[in-house]
Image (cartoon, rainbow, N blue to C red; front, side):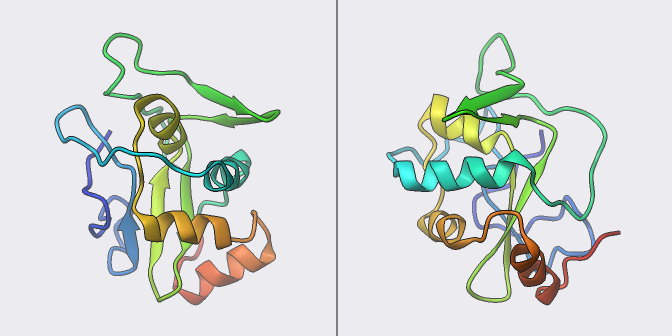
Length: 147
């Protein structure tokens, strides 16, 4: 998977690089921030990842480079909600004009590798309306549209 430092501009999606902010684009080389996260945040993250709205979808499947042998799981189940890992991306509007973008593997990184995303991302996830018209409206206001 492509590595981006947390809170760095995300150029993976091309035309939105002036708006997109990277969170959770980890690899095996760069040491991530570790620590605890609240269950409220993790629950909100999982619910957003059940059916994430994405303006663009890429073919292929990412793997966890931090899992030494297996490449990590392809799905995660939490409180009866199943999310697919390595194939989706999550777009979360921030309070300002920015949009956080995270790979679906972020849930695995938090759960299995004790990754602690930036606090502002955690607040945005908790505040984000679950995949809804309101969520999409906030992304459209920031210029994120279907390609």
